[in-house]
Length: 339
Image 1 (cartoon, rainbow, N blue to C red):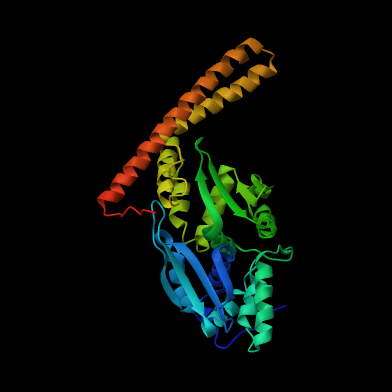
Image 2 (cartoon, rainbow, N blue to C red):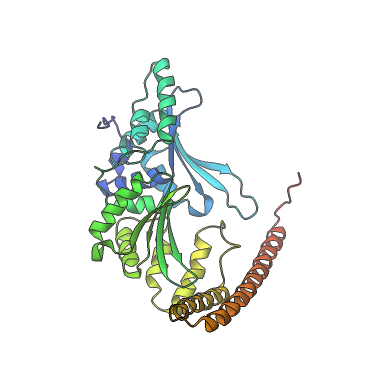
């Protein structure tokens, strides 16, 4: 079912086709749509960390509405800001976004055509809730680099592992949209997308890109297609050509992605220890395949000792960093909440 255009549709008047695809991709990842509290109208909104509010400004310029504080920062968590439109502005935004949306297309169609009938509103409010928890078939969807750039800005991650290898990942509760992106990348990437894989995990699905040259190809295409929120992360990853620059990029990336894993990321020495352990484990597998059991036993003991030292040093570094952050926040006037 095609979404009928509304007059005027604010977004299409100020957005190019590529920009609209980007916005739809981002909204499919992080956007929300639903009825207002009284069900008298529809509303469209996006919550973002205050450290990464660039995309909200794009939505505000295109569709109007407001950007307000949604939640105060607390501890290591940044404040959350919200872009929101309601009423006729929400209908206009929904009508524009549903033209390029995949995941939330049906919800946006409902919001764009919110009915005057109270009974119908109640029915559609229930239907919108159902759609949020339903997987859909996206086999006919034609993905684009602009859509992927928006979706990656919302849900993607650029990783440089402790082994200093580059990876890209996207995770979703339902795998339909990831399947569509997977097919797109297999068609567009060099070597038929070798290194692009789709995994089904216990609580979500994950698309992962592990080959360095394919990661860089994808990042370059997304940058050219409007990548905004993760632009600096992509540029850092593309610039890391040698071991030294990749170590620097890994540290810099950690400062860009928020504080969720701040106390669990390995520092430079931790990466070196992890790399040494990984190398020894590979050597153990080789020696075992050659039947050198005595050597394998000795090497395993050495690995266990290295693992214990690694765990101890990592814990010490973690608590030193936590102590530093707490003292820094107290010096800057952060209050201690007492329950």
